[in-house]
Image (cartoon, rainbow, N blue to C red):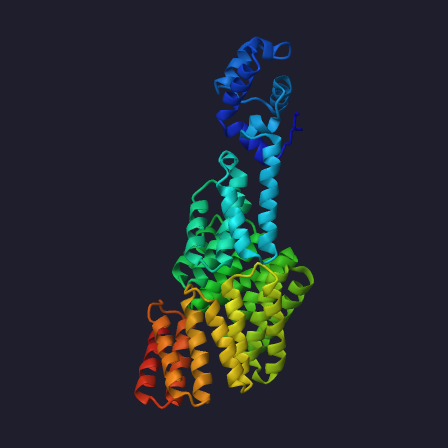
Amino acid sequence: MCVAWTSSSQGAAAVTTSDLVGLRIKTVRRQRGMSQAQLAHPELSDSYVSLIESGKRTPTPSVLELLAQKLDCSLSYLLNGVTAEQMEDIELALGYARLALENGEVREARTRFAELLENNNLTGLTALRQDTEYGLALAVEACGDLDEAISILRRLQAEELSPERRIEVAIALCRAYRVSDRLSEAVKVGEDILGGPARPAWSDALVEFGATLLAAYLDSGDLLRARQFAGELLNAADMLNTPRATVAAYWNAALVAESTGHGEESLSLAERALAVQTENGQPRNSARIRMAYASMLLRLRPTAVEEARQALLRARQELAQTSASTTDRANSEVELARAALIAGDHEQAIVHGEAGQALMAGNSRALEAEAHLLLSRAKGALGRQAEAEAELRGVRDWLEPLPDSRRAARTWYAAAETMEVLGDAEGSADLYRRALACAGL
């Protein structure tokens, strides 16, 4: 059976770059017991067929389809070394893996992507193999194995990729570095593409990438650069006027506004991002923004604690039904612990804090430190002094190896306040000094 020719870039690339096309034609011709002259007659010359088989000529799409018909084989086999049926099986398996990831079945997705990569028929299908590796990286990230995800993404980044795939890989890599608290590496990934004079024209994907870089600027404490770049992203999003660009730019600009003391502006930007995302976006990202908005609400309007708690509970439910990473799910529990602590429900704060710790795999030291800090405060409020002090030691253990950053400085400061409440004046003074040093003061 002959497969209809497609003029897609993937097909064209396979014809023009694969030296194996001619060899496949030669192999099938010999299997059919045909000479070059018999294969060529009457449309082609036998010398032209010889040049194709030796790799000295690249057949046009119409010639390749003609040869497939004469050889009674699929065009897919001549192009890729697999039959049409094998190609269909590969695409079906890839579709199932993507569906598992989208449905939040992240371990199943990881297994499916990994099994597909073991298929020898995938070796010569560069675009599909890259799709599979990228899917595996996202599944591994969602399972909380950030180091492995980074390793896969770095391998992909070193390959020749389509412009769209290169941006997708860069977004995922920048995000994984940032969540792993490897902020300088996250910034480098972003600036390698966005920081030079040859920056591509703004698109949805590029604005989303810029938003990931902006978050890294913010976490590293570079507030001046963050404020300037937030303005660039907002202008780009307004120019594109698409839901994806709007959400990415407005949400991250809201975080910058909060960090620079513009609380009401921050909530206004965040509310617009959440409204657009809820109406147009994917459930996983809707849940993540809802969770982050609730956290912002707790910081800026502590009296709205019940509203924030309901938003967090909804986000947790949404995350459980999507391809959310364990870090996302752990973060939802940590924020619920914070809400319970603000509401004075210390027992519930402990339940959520410990649930968050159980989901963590040691990949986000800053989040681990925050969980220990909230547990220390809750246990201290319940008079469980020894346990509270042990949790504070956990804060130090998780923060010590981290590079200086705004987030780390904030957690050191909060730990110092907690230690002061627990009555350790000398220890709290030491932590205050650590916070100031971390902030560069």
